[in-house]
Structures are given as C-alpha cells and as structure tokens.
Length: 169
Image 1: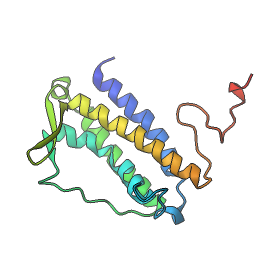
Image 2: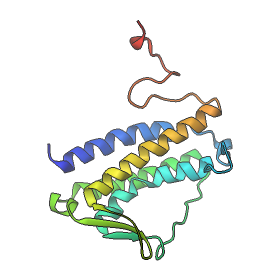
Image 3: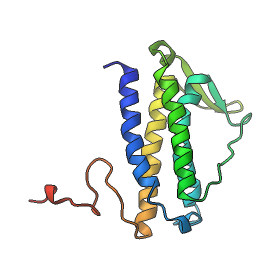
C-alpha cells in the first residue's frame, strides 16, 4: 500500500469516529469548560472540526506563519454547525490528498510564528501530525463530555457506555 492510500484510509477511519464524537455534543454546553485553563467545548469542537483542513493547507502551502496569518476561531456553538464545518474540512482535505503525489509528500513544511520556527517536517509528517491532533483533541472532548454525563461512543471498539459483553470473561 502506498503512503497516499494509507493516509486516505486513516483519514476516513478517523473521520468516522470524529463524526460520532462531535454529533453527541449537547447544544447547551458549548460554553462549558472543565477548568479555566481548558478550552470551552466550542473552542475544542471547532478546532477538531477544522483539523482536516490542515491536510489541504499542508499540500497547497509550504508553511503556516501565525505572525502573518493569525488564527481566527470559527465561533460555531451548535452541533449541526460543527458537523457542517467538519464535513467541509474533511471533503477539502481528502480531495487534496487524493490528487497529491508521493514526491509532494516528501517536501518540507514549516510551522512558525515569525522568526520562531515551531516545527519543520515533511508534508507527510505534517499530515500525520494533524491526524494525531484530531485523536488527541477528540479524546479531550470525550473527557469533557464524560464529566457532563454524556454517553461516549466507542473509538476503536466499544466504550464503557456501549455493549462491551464481547470483552467480558
């Protein structure tokens, strides 16, 4: 399996799990945060929904400089809107990845804030980092929702809220 096929497969699999998690956010909890240093559910869910767009950004640019392009949050505070943003980001990222070449994936990509270099990686490594960020932040969202007594769907198998009898002795 070539790297593009592998990345597309992973992107599809993680999107399925991400959709499940984003779809269970109660509309009345978007301003909630578990701690003052934590993001609100709105900030976290919007970030998760935008992450697939990092695939297209990585493939169509050579860097992101926060000093030149400051981050502007989407500010969506309802589940339908977050899911819509996620689907738009996913479709765009997937389309760019489908037309990419392995040679493009080997090119460097830089994340910076002015003269401060945050990271330099290949475009393939940057795409994988975006996937890892999705998993990381999705897990954060799961903890937030668990604290709100929302039943959590399984990610890589059943969750404690789903039928897990197959795992019992």
